[in-house]
Image 1 (cartoon, rainbow, N blue to C red):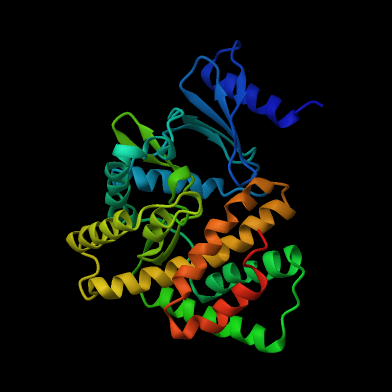
Image 2 (image 1 turned 180 degrees about the vertical axis):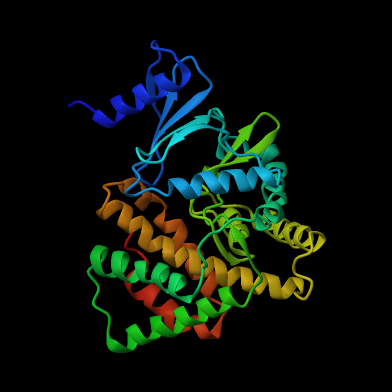
Length: 322
């Protein structure tokens, strides 16, 4: 079958770099409908990002805003918003997940945490992570995991439990300093580029809780970190934020408490998203990471009296199903 968009993208790239001999070599994609191609013989990546589904304007504006605060991002060579094509700098194949291991793990995670205050200061027009936004994200768990995947019918009491606990999680997010948030800051969205870390996949940036990106990287849905390393990174992040003018009225213990609840909100959302990726998009590989995310949810809810009825729902319907 002819891939008409790939052919059109190839012709677009040829017109930009004036080279008729190039080929587009497919790269593994992410969880979206974007497709990435390495341009043969060039240090370039061609992106097919259909404008009907992808946030291309946001990608371009946030890329520039991150670069302005000295965060390494792929340089944009050219773009066509109408067609949904972009030509970017090729950052190579060395993902954070490949290098942040063994003896180098701590130093790489420290580098990742050290970028957070810079990201927080990004000046760009982006959506607010408000109560409506938060509740929609949490509803993905109800819709895609409980209803569509597990075929669970909740009682009225259980529905009310979720509603109350979702409000509690939203209150926590909204009570924090609101900053620029990458919103998917984890091991698969960081690259090693020469001697620095580069950030990718940032087009879903919002203005939201200051603990969100830290939760994403230390409670990664794809990697388990040692508890001692997590504690070290929390302390380091807190100090970094303080030194950058944030958290002046927040203690370390308050920061930790808010971080845990923010992480829980994110992981409940992810339970729904991973099921949606499987059911709607045929990306069943994401189901392999659900046991880790379920463990996070259980750990993050176990010591909070307000979350015990919610935790009971997880134990009743979700634990042992994946």
